[in-house]
Length: 59
Image (cartoon, rainbow, N blue to C red; front, side, top):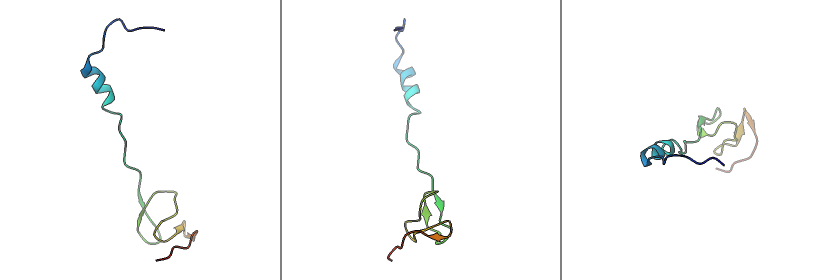
């Protein structure tokens, strides 16, 4: 296995690792009730997905 000839500085290492972070999950509006939900998921507030009631949610 190849080995590096020179040591990488800590600033070079830190610059590389600075971009490794989590991003916020995507969000969209529910077409039925207007609540914020994840795309391609059933709305947790009303239970609708693509204008069809998938689950019955008790309010």
